[in-house]
Image 1 (cartoon, one colour):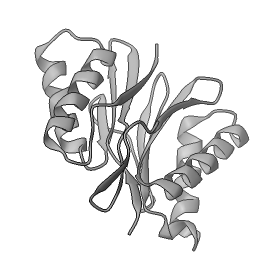
Image 2: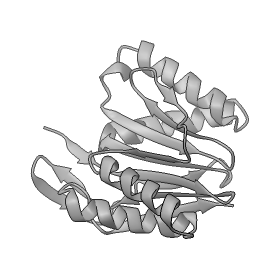
Image 3: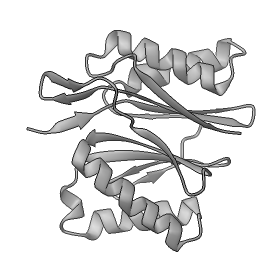
Image 4: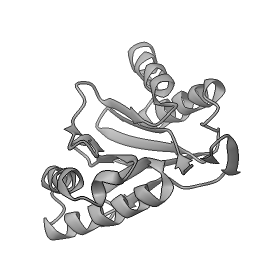
Length: 177
């Protein structure tokens, strides 16, 4: 039994990045919180991270990732790879059940405990239980509208919230231009 946070979506469009997270935190089938903030700007406002999964685990990884960014002078790629290496090889970290999205003005990555550091083919990436719906909606909005990144993540998250019981419409959005 774990307290879990879900659904993060990142979109880059026309040189602008937006990352959104819903506010719902659950314990099994019970909603504990409606207004959690799962998306934050870090490293002097140059990097946005979002997390999904077990809350305590995600917060632990968030702190470790911030330390990596400080150590590697804000190099997103190097910090993501080093965190993933630690996560995969450290006995304690291997048990953590969470995922992260980390993005800056040029790159975005999904970072997982399997040692994955995945840069998406397209400028859309999502994690968490509502991510499939959010990603599908964002992809359709990119292909068939002229909306900017912020409006795409906002609308895609609303669509995900309408179909995923672990995602709500209380959305936090952070952006970088």
